[in-house]
Amino acid sequence: MFVDSSIRFQFLILLTRWFFKRRKSVAMLKSSLTPKVEKKPNRRCDLASTFDVQSINQHEFQVTDGSRNYLVDLQQMTCTCNVFNVDKIPCKHAAKAATSRDFNPGLFMHQYYSKANIGAAYSESIRPIDELLEASEIPPHVVAYKWFPPDLKEVLEDL
Ligand SMILES: [Zn+2]
Image 1 (cartoon, rainbow, N blue to C red):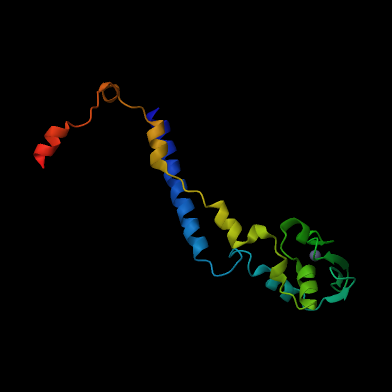
Image 2: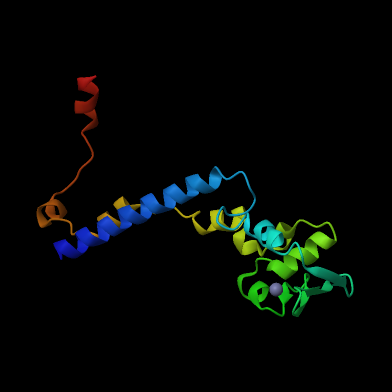
């Protein structure tokens, strides 16, 4: 019982530190995107510098990498290579399609990667002390003790 409570308490302490550290990191972000993905669309666009883009309509594009053709839909966040469909970060083809219309490819990232979403994920505070009090047993001599308010006359005499 004691070991379980101790492990639970240590785990809650770890979560408290983890959540606090992430909330602090999110508050310090200068970009509206999470750091691990904010540069990906532009890097992918650099890799697609030699690709050809043909607009089909306002949202759809045919992108050719020299050997294969890909269909990109920026509104639906899809590409026939399936990279954009899965990770919701513009693939090389989608990034190239976006820049062909002078759009920043970062605009076509899913909101999963937004600063607001990551902040919401860590917005709850974890208070291990409250959990410890719930988990611990109150000793019987404390439960049996009768608590009475202080005698007002004695309190006033001490002042
Ligand atoms: Zn693609």
